[in-house]
Image 1 (cartoon, rainbow, N blue to C red):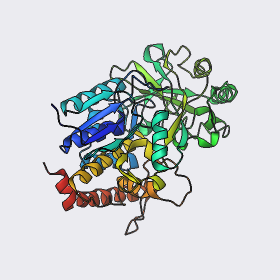
Image 2: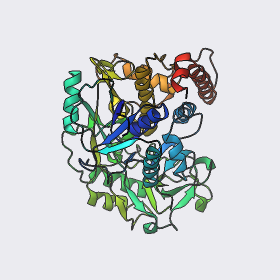
Image 3: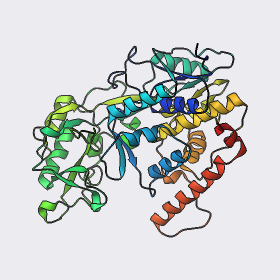
Image 4: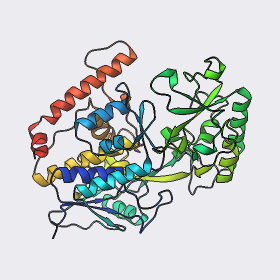
Amino acid sequence: MPPQPAVTVVGGGLAGCEAALQLARLQVPVRLIEMRPVTPTPIHRGDGLAQIVCSNSLKSVEPSTASGLLKQELDAMGCRLLDAARACAVPAGSALAVDREAFSAEVAARLAAAGVAVERGPVESLPKRDGHLWLVASGPLTSAALIDELGRLTGRPALHFFDAIAPTVTLESLDLSTLYRAARYGRGDADYLNAALDRDQYETLHRELLAAEKADVHAFDRGELFAGCQPIEEIAASGPRSLAFGPLRPVGLADPRTGGKWPHAVVQLRQENREGTLYGLVGFQTRLRQAEQKRVLRLIPGLENAEFVRYGQLHRNFYLDTPRCCEKDFSLKGRPDVLVAGQMTGVEGYVESIASGLFTAWSAAARLRGLDLPPLPPTTICGSLLGNFLFDVTSERLTPMNANFGLLPDLPVPVRGKLERKLARGELARRELGEWLRCPSVEDLLRD
């Protein structure tokens, strides 16, 4: 008979799967419960674990970006899902993008190889058990019953914001004689397909995005849209040039057919599977009705006959008021046997969710071993986001946040030049994270 789990992870998304793999790595008996397919969600397909439903990009790997630095930090900490993502990567220039289905299957295989028991069905209550911890990483689409249970335990109402998904089309339906491959400023491989728009085409697309009929969303409020994932029609509503200076920015995307000139605007498409048969429209998250998506997006040159295998949609995301609900180890105040991780804590983004799952798993394992982990260094992306931002009570309402350099403190010694400052921040973060990993309690936790 397998050992009784010391930790039950609720939720088979990115944070939950990373947490389960970290606990298995730390020799903690663990089981993972995913509610799908017994209880479906409006946006997931099938019952795959670690399912990516929005963009297939895990953002930049460049060390001069916050996302790239975060990946370096997680690599130093032995992150499991980043390694799985690289095994399922598809061409995406300087970004790490994955074949969604291959990635889900890879994560499931790694969980099985690590001996993590996976169960299916909803979790609606979190009863206390001797020697047992709950690690809830059920994500922004947590079931209503579990949201109610968390509300009862925290004594605080759930928070929410709205997020959007971009559509996906088939390669064979695109006019490749109209599209061209290019990397911005010629950096890296030309992994993106680009649709050039002249002024008239751009203005027509902008006008039709504003006029198109939108899908009804219950309790939708424009002010509750997540800033990093605005629907394309909402960006268009900001002004006539908002798209050209935003997701359709042409700068650095020279069109070889016009002597290397920059178009008036550019729509980019990114490969979404290993076979290269599916492409996603970059930055085209939308809540337009499906028929309107087909009509309007086929106005883009090269997409006149585009076949849509997935339409964009808007969905409501739940999260907790973390600074007023949780202790610094992400346990609930008043219920130290319940820890939370992932997007429900207020982190936003795939890699940020993975980071949250990793750190909360380490917190759970440390608790079981009687270890006190020191705070993550605030000079790191992990520490600034998970240790500082999520527990800042300056604002009356927590707003979800991506990794960014603005979270980091000033450098101890001023550095001139924007790029040089970013690289210096990265060097400092890597050095101080290395020192943190050598702390006695951290070394004891990670010792085989």
